Image (cartoon, rainbow, N blue to C red; front, side, top):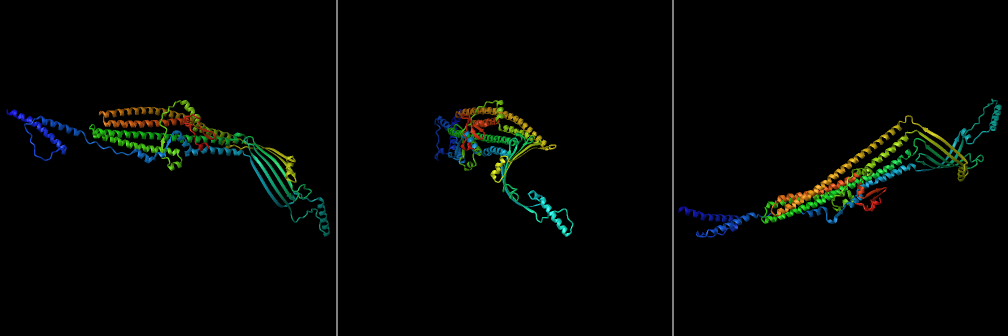
Amino acid sequence: MNFEILNLKKYLLLPLLCCACCIEATTAADPSTQPAESAPTISDSSTNTAQPETQSAALDTDAKKEAKIPVAPTPLETANLDSIFTSVTGGSASSLSLDIPEMVRMALSNNSDIKIQRLEPELGQTDIRRALGLFDPRFGFTSQYSHSDTPQNAQQYVATGGQTTQQQLTLIDTLEALLAQIKGEPVSTNVTPQYTDPRIFSSQEYDMLWQLGGLTPLGTQYSLNFSQLQARNDINIQRPPSLFYPEYTSIAGLSITQPLLKNFGPAANLAGLRIARIQKKIGWYDWQKQMITSLSEALYRYFDLVYAYENLRVRKEAVTASRLLEQQNIQRVSGGKMRPSDVWEAQASLSNNVDLALRSMNNYIEAQNSLKSVIFTDKMAESGAISRIIPASSLEVPNVTVDRAEFIHDAIANRPEYLEIVSRAEQEGIRVRYAKNQSYPTVNLQGNYGLTGLEGEYGSSMGNAFSGQGTAFSVGVVVSIPLGNIEGKANLDAAKLREKQAQIAIQKAITAISIEVDTSVSLLATSQQQVIAARDTAIAARKTATAEEKLLEEGKATTFEVVRLQNNASESQSRELAAIATYRKNVVRLAIARGKLLNELGISLQKEALQTAMPGKRNNIQLPQSMQSQ
């Protein structure tokens, strides 16, 4: 009996103890639930025991619900990317929308290296003119007046008309003999007239000389001379014997020297002109090389700019996705469906993506500044009028048909580097022929012919000359043979060795071109596969991230996994953009290896003018008027 009473008390007190514990726990968790001080209430032991059990269960449910709904974290404050981008790059008013044709036009018009190299063909033209100057006829004129009073010796006296007659000598000898007999002195048989002062010969001359001479491509040296002399002296003033006072003498003459071995023919006399013409071609090739170098560098930098611009867009989208995930997780935490740590996970991803977006922004700024350095003038760069370049051409993937044999053929026919090497070999061949000619002995044929006329006035003397009053001619040969000819042979051997070097350089260039074409084709094929792989990866990553986001909404995935997949999708998009940019660069590299870059850009060099390609060609470029006039 006592045992049953004890068991009954046990079962009655247990619910009361549980209820008291629940009330105490609820009171401790929320102080506001604690009642004010009042008199203690004693429950009636006769009350139904089911009521305390119901109250205990309700209090237990409220406590559990309170424990599962923590306070949601506040949203993360991050940098405003748009305002930062505007502050560092300027507003839309200072932006420039730039596509590839416009970029090429700006590079052609503004690039300093292209402008510098553009002068090389003009310098080559000056060399041609200098070489042609060797065959310019040379005109000369000389005018001279002279006066002289010359004391004469006996020979000069006789030469200028003075004489002693035999009668004068006999008379002098007779007088000298008579005087000697009167004085009783011996008579001398040798009597010489005695003069105390020499005779002075006075003359005045006025001489004019016209000359026209030059050189022909055959090596002929010619000289056409015409002179007129007016003479006044102590002889022609006396009539007779003089016929005219003053005397006018006209002389017309032609002199010709024709080399027969050394310096004969075009090989010797046109060598400088031919070398200069080839040098001008080399100047054009240098200009083409510089254009290809500058334009390819501009294209590389443009593709870097497009990648940086598109990658900045991807990073901004990643920031937007992270911000959305953060907001959704905050709502889920507020609804008791997620822990605060999931919000913090989303905020960590958001902060990381903001950092990556800022880095992409820096890359974009650096890429556009790099492009400015090759397409802007110094004044444009200094003014800062254009602070933002927005690429208008997207990163497309053009399809390129590969034909190695055709590519090598194109390269040999169009590569300016190869054509320059061939041209230099041509120059060495010309130098060999010149050196061979210079090793010959000198054998020159010379001829002179002259006409002379004498009269008392200029016109009459000239007429007498051309009427053949007096004529003269001469013909001769001049021979000079260097014994041993060491210098000539050494020059010829050196020229042949340089020509051989040039021929070897041609073969080396062909090998290098073949290797470069093969390398460019391989890089293009590899990068094309990389684009395909990167694109497939990006598509799969985006689908995986989207599917995981839906699972997260259903409570079947974790924030950690969603963040990982979202970041992986963004990285995959960036890798796809980088692969496309690399592919576009390799397309340019292949065009360079083929020697077709200028053609594919719609640019052609024809003689002295820079012209556009035929209408309808892809990327046809209408050059500025300033470039067309150069």
